[in-house]
Image (cartoon, rainbow, N blue to C red; front, side, top):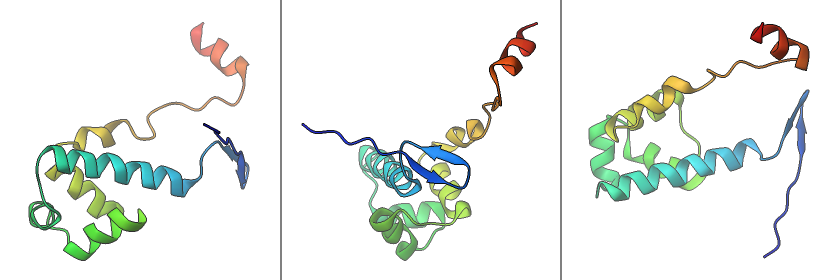
Length: 102
């Protein structure tokens, strides 16, 4: 099996994966959770109060509004996953890490 690792540069940031790959990984996890709970797209649409078209587009392309994604996470019982988003502190240097430990 051949594995490709590509570093993409976007503005000043280096990514090991693209934003689209992250979106599609979220789709895979959401779809797996939906299927584990034996919920159809139609039922999820109703439970989350998100249009069926939005659910289908999300599962196909990875594109959805943040508001709809949060609603879906509540409907699937995964809302706590958003509590840790952006919670890690970013360090600009090793010195910042050392200074924080003192």
